[in-house]
Structures are given as C-alpha cells and as structure tokens.
Image (cartoon, rainbow, N blue to C red; front, side, top):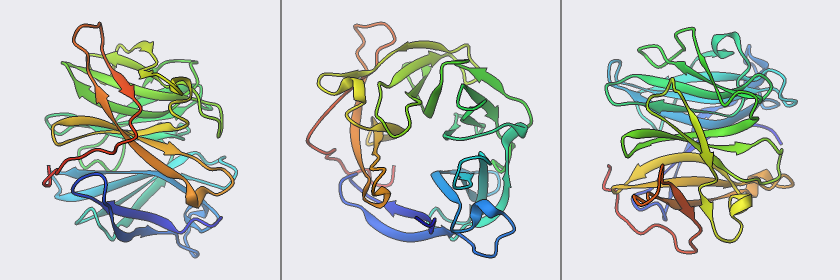
Length: 263
C-alpha cells in the first residue's frame, strides 16, 4: 500500500470527527526515499511552539522494510497544515521507530522513541524550536523491548505507557512512573483490567491526552490485512488514590460524552 501522506481530523466531543484533509503529502520526486509513496509515514505528533508561533509535526519516517528508522519534521502556521518539510534524520544518530513527543509546563519538550533495534527507549530533549534534538539522550527500560510509548502528567509525577514488541499481535500494556522525563523510571504493571486486559483490548496504546478535565488513551486496532480499515478506541484513564502509583484503564462500550470547547 502506497503512503499517501498524513491526514488531520478534529472533534469537539471525541465521538464525531471532521476530516480536515491531508496536511502533509508523500512526494514522488523527494530527495528522501522514505518520503516517496513507497516509504512509511507513521505516528504523527504535533506540538505548538509558543516561541516561533509554528506548529511542528514529527512522524516516523521509514522505508518499506523498516531499515531507515528515522523521523521527519515539518512545520506549519496551523495544525491543519499545510506542513512544509524541515528535515529527515535519525535522532542523535540513533535508530528511532515508534515514538511520541511530550511538552512539559514551561515550554520544554522531549522525544521518546524505541531504539537500539526496539530493545530500549530513548528520551531526548528537543531544541527550543522543537524542530530537532539537542544531541543527548537517556536510556529508559533498557533491554525491556517496549514500543509505542505514550506519556501523561498527573498526581505529581509522569506516567509512561508502552506496548510489548510482538509485531501485529496485541500484548499486555505496561506503565512506569518517574518524577521527571530523564528519570529515574520505575516499571510498574499492566494498567488494563477485566476481559481482554492482557491484549490491551485487542489494541495498542498510541496516545495519551487530556480533554474536558479527564485523561484518555487512544488505542490502535491494527488490521495487518487491511491497514486502511484499522480503527481506534478512546478509553478513560482512571486514577485510584487508594492504591500506590494508581492508574487504571477499563474497557467501555460507550464513547466519551463531553464538549471540549477548544480546551
């Protein structure tokens, strides 16, 4: 399947979604093989940089056999694009596959990516304009083979949710906690409960976010035989004060019901 580009959707209630169209397109004549339709563009993340006034898009950029293992960065005046390419590279000269971005209070941001052949996560601070990395990184969950990292801040600490490396097969999620992005990180447990907890409800966590005063997790439900038909679930993340390091994700057949009113 050819890579067409990156598409944006928007919603005011997390149930009904409007298609904003392609915000970054593959380029048949690109100098970068990974940006051509035969390449791979996955897991887009967008941060707004208050210093530059620009929206900064990062995505996993790769060849069809996942040998390049890098990132692409592009910028725009709006989250709906169009985004213009800034660079394609390997962060800190290291391989980068599944990744996420995290912006903390005060305007600094980090890249968290699966590296070292998916053996270990790397955490690297971004430059002030969010268009690159500063050059150093710390290793997290060394040799644990975790991918699809997602981060949230709550209860005075950071939570890092990850998936195991089992290809297209769903597996148990695990989360860890730390006082700051550079650690130290402590691996805790599977936050999912009930039926299908050990398969993360037949999905893979791809994003943690806050809307309407609550935290949510976005799950991918990959269909390797028809990637275009793969769907998502949005589930609430619950914090239980009676437990140590509490985080719980339970399945719900009912979607979120809220108006986020732009927040």
